[in-house]
Length: 142
Image (cartoon, rainbow, N blue to C red):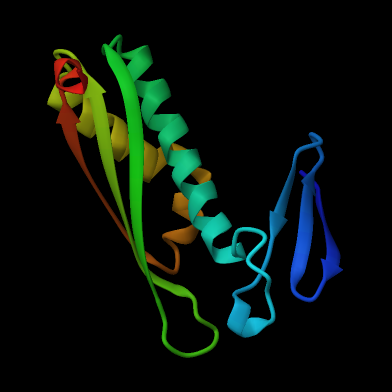
């Protein structure tokens, strides 16, 4: 896997993947940023959240669960001192569907966290990562 990061100006960059997708990243205004893009550490959390969500949805679909929606709400705590690494990350899944089996949802979250999600497994080597979930019936969406 290869990516490139090109400096725009100040503390703004464009990251491009080998698949041709691009994203703008920028620092906080107090660090010289212009707020024209995501912060790099936000991007790291989003990447981890997308990775684990991908797994959870795939596992639930494979288990033939009637999933309609999956949202991963992530809260993270960073160290006060430089380097301001993540010290805690909590992933709360909100899974929507009718007649979802809570045992299957719990299994999907656990499998992602412990076996499949490369991003969260890698981060868990140095960060305390916790997960939980709630199930919302599809009929509650109306």
